[in-house]
Image (cartoon, rainbow over all chains, first blue to last red; front, side, top):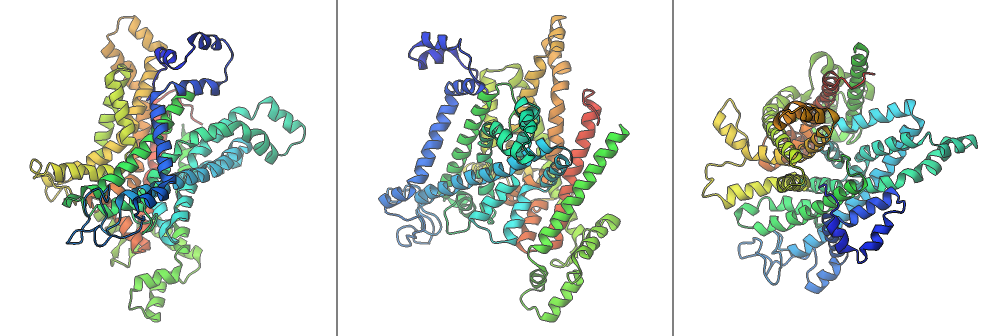
Length: 319
Length: 321
């Protein structure tokens, strides 16, 4: 959503409009400008609020569980299932109803947020780490290294992501760390390209020249001189990878090769619900699906606003 | 031009070769020959039977010979291998699954490209209006929507909530086009919508961005100032230049569609390539997995190649190196 900064909101937000006008005269860094554009973006505020709320709910899931008195994997055979052994609808005991094993869906949805967020963030960090190293090498060393890394990216992109991920999960044992590893490693292509482009644009700068003249080796130049100058960009663009990683994790768990039961996970819960929801057990599907959708939507809206703020004309990850 | 073509073609072959080696190593090293043979032999496996299967699958040969055997079969005979699990050739397994995937992808592609371009153009010629906001918000919404969430939502709405109205609406399995064209069509409506809606988002945004950029160019201003009607400006000058990146994206997306249809096929029970490979991985049916992966990689690499060449041909500004 490309929202132009609206002058009226500035006045509403800033208590002293005259002072703001004076500040305009000062030179401002691109980061500062972007930050100011972002602060005026209503969509960014709503999505940030939502993300913070989800993070808090995830952190305090055990507290809420203790307060409600239901564990995430605790089965309520007597009250959590009806007389024919099927899930019971939402009530004052089970806010979101129960699942097919008589577990409290509300608590499980909360615990599912922990998995989604942790996998999303850790996998993105793995992607960024690998992407930065490859991007630095391709951009700074160029030549053969550039070609090798370009072909590597082509190969990774030529095999459908889910196919690689499912295969790896079957070959070794699927689980939490493997999911992070697979999504993280396969996600390096996008940050690698970003870093490569950045490095190429700054590697002829005087300070790099100076470092080289002083006898700095390529390792030192890449990690001491170049890295600090691309890292901020990388972190911002990297945040766009989080929702993709969350969807990938949910998809793997949906296909049964991600997070393994009985751990509460949104993708796995949706997969469990698929056999029930058309027979009247709508809550079983609805709550995990809505939780997943709200999370990815909030991250995407925020990422979009950040991108717009940094580069009002630019195209993003989706294009 | 010839140099460009040769270079590009060599790159494509290199990538395909690397992909085939990667797939081969992943599967033959991963589970290990003994486990593979045991899986194929089933529960009643005797050591002799396992040895026999290892021999049949060439699992007792050195790795490079196994690779050569596999790849030469594909290259010289177009033979993707023999599926011991199902007792038929991989080519026929793929042949049975291909029509379903092709129907799904091509139908959905028409929808997502059509919708994406139309919504993108409308957004671009009416920027920052309610219509534009609507389309861009919808794009973000569906972009964030995991495929299975959308698929189940559609099934829930049309096959459950609206069942009284939509009784005729089947929402599961696949009927081949030759068996019954009408049934083929109605069975595919929801899968098409699912795949198209999650994919169309990128097209709306790309068309909008590139159209806005083109409409800001000097030559468009010239065209307007000489009195050309807005409709003609958009059609003749705008669309033509704005659609080049969209064509690129469409080529690549159709190439990579196999990866995208895995979940759609799973949700709707369509027995296409995506469904087949998930089954095959579950059964550790190596020949089928490797065959489908190589086929998918070939699609992607050649789609890339064709798009690159088309791009160079269509857009004179692209320098051929």
